Image 1 (cartoon, rainbow over the protein chains, first blue to last red):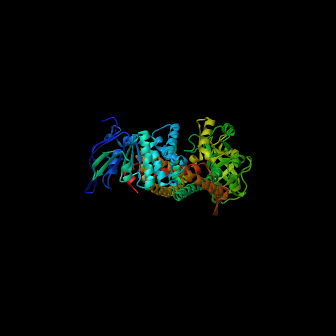
Image 2 (cartoon, rainbow over the protein chains, first blue to last red):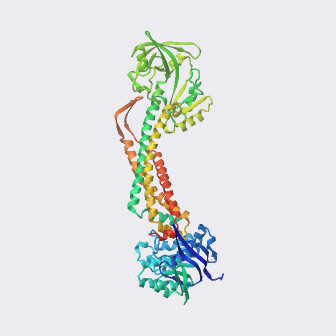
Image 3 (cartoon, each protein chain N blue to C red):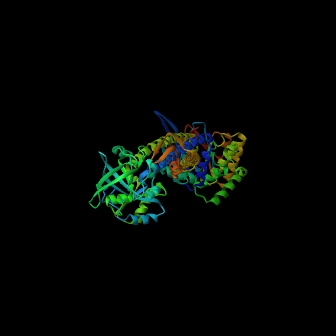
Length: 230
Length: 406
């Protein structure tokens, strides 16, 4: 395995069984994502984008095949190990923001570092820097319900990036935002990607994300249909 | 973890109306529990005081073996020395020596078995309320007098009253025949006296002379400054007397049947409290379960980010604990207020009870440490117990399923 590979899937399949009905969400998928890439996985609804992201993040397990993230074979891990692995290596950005409503902006961003046992001084400095970067330092004491959708997604981006994970997985990050806000957020993430060399993997069917990404992987019926580097 | 605590605290106030209703339910349960305990403590306190002060005292000293098998010959040989020790103990408020003997009483053509009790009227007035149980006549006169107080039953059996003479025949401790004439100076009340048998009460010196007991005694009755400390104080007295030939027992042992009946009655109160707590617990379960179901997606996010199931479990349990603690604080205020008010004004008894010279007109409550600690421990334990199931449910949330839930 090459040293700068962050994600590597080999023959990953996922089949859901409901009663006697089998749904093949992913046919054997081989995908390699390198450090610093800004990759979009696109495709229509039901093409397997979210399933692929869930498997790559260890939230779901493949029916067959192998997944390596940051050089670690994930299928061999227990649930507790997977939980720790996600904490230490993956940042999540969700379509519905999914901030913790009872935590302030500052606390939402700080939370992941508390889990990782980052010392208080360093936590405070990193939170400040991230909130400055996403332009929300003036709103650090606010609760998510007091923010707009775009602001909430910025907090989610700050939360995903603050612990400097190996990869940030973003599931339809602009789906709930208007096009201007979505575009601004994508620019911000691209900027952070360039400045910090952080790896991003998006699932999307938003044309704007596809255009702004540096690599576009399209899925169709659970298979990779195309893989284009720009 | 401080942040988990903060999240739990804010979660408590998240759905204020629901938390308020649950909190009120828990506070109400606490207050009711505290009230039943307070009333139980207060009422039993009055009953114990009435019972022990009427005759038995808070503890008694006997010669070893006397309690199991009372005998004229099982005596405390040096009650004066024991008295000196007792006088030196702060816990002992008063003490009085007694002697007992069985005898036959004669008046005219009537004969009946009688229990003789010799007591020190001055000391007895400080320790018990026997002197107030006289329904007619006066209490025991001086040692030189032949005057005695008899129970209503003995008076009826011998058909005698105040001023009448009768004879007692018994056995002296020296093997002699005890035989003397006595005059009735007082009769104990038939309904309110702790002496419902054929009793004859006389001055201890007269009784000792009658029984040829010398300076010995069969019993030292003790009254402590606090009846609730009777067991501990009895042990203290036993240690201070340092005499293996003496047996010191609290009222719970000397009046075992009364104490056990009381414990049985208390069990009934415990069942009531258990029902109150079960109702509270169902309310808490409903609230926590609802909250967990509503927040499934949040727990999914927390777990996706790497929060361990134990931390999610801890979050729910902390939330339940905080709600229970805050409710308990409100319940403690309400319960203590009610108990204090009822300890002063009490609940009037429609038909007052008189016993041992005391009229029991009101059921009084009491504010004791137990009226705080037991409801607190029970409310928190019940809340935590029912919180376990929803907390496990939250801890077991599968992130991928939770994140796809609405």
